[in-house]
Length: 264
Ligand SMILES: Cc1cc2nc3c(=O)[nH]c(=O)nc-3n(C[C@H](O)[C@H](O)[C@H](O)COP(=O)(O)O)c2cc1C
Image (cartoon, rainbow, N blue to C red):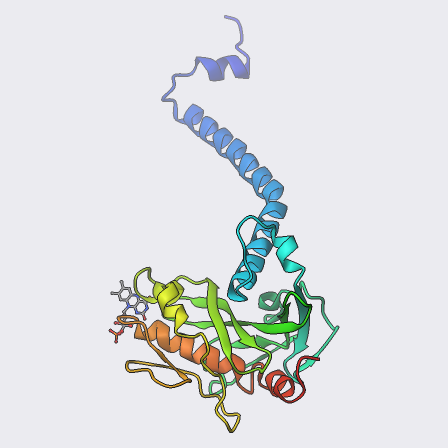
């Protein structure tokens, strides 16, 4: 009787042979994992560019200068990114404007842990460096400041921007570009009607104290925003994170200098 080769024996084995099934499964998994790995590596630069462009689109939208039909690069010509050291409120060149503060907040060299009392936005650690964006009007004069903000809602950390005037006090708009709050409840932070409440509200009272607040109902005056109905926890999170970032542990020093001396 002729001796069958390993391949011939494998081919001849019935399809429900456990060893054959196992070998075919392992082979399929191996080929699939190669495919997934290859795609992930190939797509990484594209994903990075898309994420950056999405963030830049959100900056343009919160600044009110996003126009369909124009390229992001074209529109971004009127936007200048600067890095601030929030410990001093001054500009710094310690890191570039493509600095990733989320990664930076995990590095003990570039961040610090917030105390429980300080951490009203529930972010635990805070990067020393923050990239802000200064927006120019058609005559090249700065007319808005875009500050990155983030903090915890009910289910997720909300990441967004607040656009303010060069008086470092009057809000132009607030916009989140990433969160996982419930659609129709906390997710209503994206609702244009709710967002519209923020326009022209003031961050600080006449004594320079943080005054902006999200209240459960009956918002009035130039500092109050009505909470989202059925989403008090997300609303409280937004209240806390906005107050944190414009306060003394956030952009407070930078905003005070800008208020006194204008944009430098
Ligand atoms: C499935 C589910 C999802 C919810 N999602 C949110 C949410 O995203 N944000 C939020 O503040 N509350 C959410 N809530 C409601 C909260 O549990 C809580 O009841 C609410 O924040 C209280 O707000 P109110 O005082 O305006 O009713 C959710 C509740 C359920 C059952």
